[in-house]
Length: 93
Image 1 (cartoon, rainbow, N blue to C red):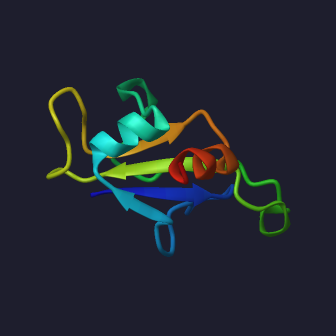
Image 2 (spheres, one colour; image 1 turned 180 degrees about the vertical axis):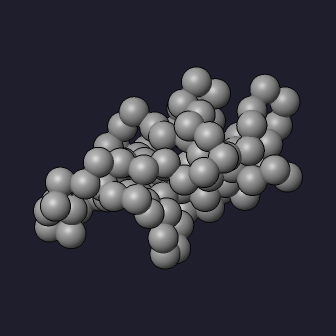
C-alpha cells in the first residue's frame, strides 16, 4: 500500500503515522499522482519557516514501496502539487 502523508516544513516530513494508506492505483485515480512528481528514495525536505508547528500541514507526500511500484513508477517519494485540504476533499469522495 502507498502511504499518504500530510507534511509540514522541515527535515523530517514523514515522521509519525501516514494519514492514509491505499493502493498506488487508488492514489493515481483519486489524487491524480503522476510519475513526474517523483522526488527520490529519501523523504523530501521542505524549507522550514520557523512557524511550522503553528502553520500546520502544507504538503502532500506519497510514499511508494518497492512491492507497490507498478510499471512506469519507481519506489520512493512523490510530492503532489496540491494542499492537504484538497487531498482530503478528493479522498473523502
